[in-house]
Length: 240
Image (cartoon, rainbow, N blue to C red):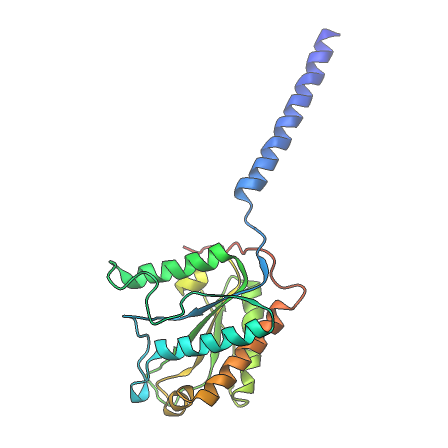
């Protein structure tokens, strides 16, 4: 009888330890953590001592990135979307005098995005290519992110409002640091090619910038208002 009681007690102890261990695993190592709905991080690429691309007519990418990002911010706020900007002025996030400024700047952008845990992060950039004929907006997403891919396709379609003849498609990438290291769906919007005379001239025009911002805003709203989109952090395999 005594041995049976001891056996029953042992079984309950083992079962209890299993439950405790499972709970600890879920708390400590769960790959998915709830993100903040209706929240977007806008990342204006480059800044300060990092000008980004310098295009036709000495058009500087960092300035256009920030201008467009601010316009998108205002449009989203009117739609009651919470917006976090990685930068709001012409400066690098890591500070101009730090060692390895570019690397530190990128790490800080990633830190902001991961800490804020938005439903979506959108990094705004301008493109460039050796052939001046190449033009048009294009959206990039992390190749291992189904939600990133879905968001990029929606955004690419939204940008047709700026140029209905743009045949570019959303493109996967597994090397961009920002896409690899962020833990939420992140897309990079290249608004046009500063190496193309027409794109460069358009992107310096305020009315055109407004159209780009309106299209990006429309794309973001469509993405975050999809019932199935977001709500969990992403576990990006192979991201290093």
